[in-house]
Length: 324
Image (tube, rainbow, N blue to C red):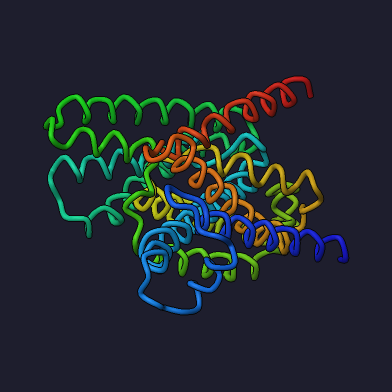
């Protein structure tokens, strides 16, 4: 229990440091003491407006999106009992991104993007798990392979949408597709969704702990596995859809963070879920800070940096699983 407490405190410390770095570093650097003062007071200065209107909303949105993706990754990995599972690899992010780009192509208003992302993510989830349900082999590589194939299909559809899009829409669609938090000004909804998901899933931590050992064992211990699977499908797809609708198709956060948290001792879902949310938010917060400062005043898509981090780790996990 003491180890779990230290792990949670470390995640909170990482989050605090990441948030402070995000509001102090940029095209105009602001001293940390001054930045903290601007968080609690409003003096109308230029630095105060930079923090309150630009950096703080973007930082909170990045944290929320990273946390949503990390928690969704936890759910997918419980469902498959496979550290290689995450919304990006299983095609859930691709389904949400394809639906959002379709809505953009039809020139729908921004209010339609989140519902479109939810529909796309749910459809992709049902497609992947429905195609492998007949064998009831939830641990097999068949489900993971099906997800990879479905993700490739969504990638082809996304390429088609981009190829037929008007030239004036194309730059914005491409930048959003690579992961873009530049227009993040309303972190309230994703933050609320993240907090709600963490609280509700914490109530199911015991069932998740048992399910991580296998659905047959969970059923033998009295867990309603059919209901649990549906909850994991729906919640995982909804969290992914919300993250994609806000930040674009940002990959590998849901793969990296849960695995690393488990490696340092966070196997109990009472600790894993909140620590993964904090760590995933911190990871994306740091990546977004780097994306807007590495070649300032120009900005990089944050999804590019998460992919550069995630690809080698994914290959490492794949090699370890093959050796096993």
